[in-house]
Length: 325
Image 1 (spheres, rainbow, N blue to C red):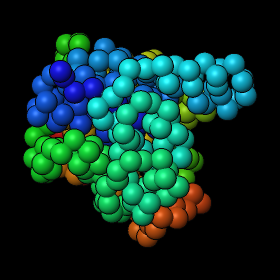
Image 2: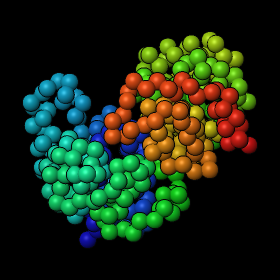
Image 3: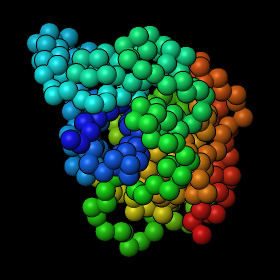
Image 4: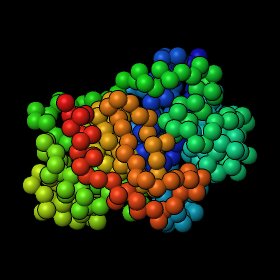
């Protein structure tokens, strides 16, 4: 009988992108594995139709928080409890909410231990745990907790030799282009629009501004109006965004999910850091980070650290031109 595996990684987009590499790793060791992924419903589309996932199960936690609907809560719990048993249930998130979701499924649950989990209380819900330093690359952490649960030997090659994490469904674009991610989940993670405008004019290839909210669209308008080399893209779905980035020559952006897609698809990228640091990426010769001068305590992130504005657009442009060669 094939192994039935449940992965619980609910959010955010970047964390989901940086975890999905495990799908090909699992299948390289267990080709017949049946993998179900439990994910926050807003991010489920990026996993739909993935050839290595048996089923994507959307979890409406944000909708529950907004509506406070008891019937929706009851329906969600019933859905989770009524699923067939799993051989392995892995909480790759390490939060109380993800641990509770995992514990409602039938089967033994593996996750981070109390000192490794982002919220230590989550470890109380696990049958077995992994001790993985919190300060190492998030991608390494994601892979290590899952490979340990499945007793797959870990090596860096499992990550560095990956094929594109999401399937390619469109043809390459004929003209060279750069994707520019201007938004992020916190304002302090956003490179100022004034510097993005300067950066676009320093680059030799058209810059396509990616946006996902009204505020980001307004910033994109400002950048386009103040640059001769910036183009606003149409609003894209998650699946459209993956295909767009997969065919760009370079992605430049803040520490945010769409920027991380470039690494997932083996495309060049530059990630800009202020209140966070390079722990959020897996650096390669074509995937680099540029950090401001501020020091980061990953256990107590300072959301009022706006030092990303200190990064010189000329430095970014120099690195970009090196990657575009």
